[in-house]
Image (cartoon, rainbow, N blue to C red; front, side, top):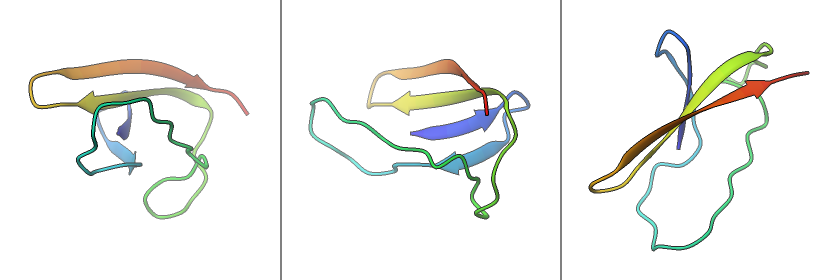
Length: 62
């Protein structure tokens, strides 16, 4: 799962591995790839499988 800002700039990749089907969760500590805290705002997250790519929106409020 990857997190992006509205300009399609990658903020952080939380998970980048193949997993079996099932229910999973990921925790984002509100930091970017450099370890800096990110600002409140609208972020997008993307899930990818072999044949499906899904992008959803979330709002981060501090």
